[in-house]
Length: 217
Image (tube, rainbow, N blue to C red):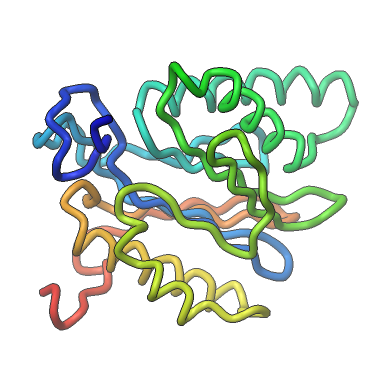
C-alpha cells in the first residue's frame, strides 16, 4: 500500500502527509499540526488547518487522506452536537474519542485516516486520546503522521510529566519544527490550539517565528 503523504507515494490522492501532536497539561491540552497537504510529490495546499473542532472544547488533529480524515471529523462533529443537545450539557472528550474509534474501525477497509482527539471537559479536565486502528488509548502526549517518525526520540527524551502550559507549548512547537525540517511531506505554518476550562486559544506560527535548528537551517 502506498505511504500516503510519504516521499515514496506515487498516488495522486490528496493526503495530509503530516505531523500532528497533542499534549496534556494541568488544566488543559495543547494541540498542534503543520499545514502542508500533498498529492504524490506535489504540494497542493501550504496552509491547510488540520485541527478540526468537533465541539467547543474538543478537537481532532487529522492525518492520512485529507478527504477521509475530514469526513470522520465532520461525522463526529454532527454526533457531538446531537449528543450535547440530548444530554443538555457539553459532551465528554472520551465520547468524541469513542466515536472516532468506532468510525475508524467500521470503515477501516475503506478509509485512510488517523485522528488524535484532545480537549477539556468538566469530568476529567484535559485529555489526549490516540485512536489508531480502531483502538483508543489515553496518553499524556501523542504524535502522528508521516513526520512523527523523525521525532520519536526527541519527544521521548524531552517530555516530562507535570510540565506547565508554556513548557508544553514549546515542546509541541519544537517537535513540529523538527519534523517539518526532516519530513518532505510536512511543512508550511504551525497551527496551535490551547484548550482549557476558560475556552480555546488559536494561534498560527509562521515565518521566522518557527524555531530553526542549527543542522536544518
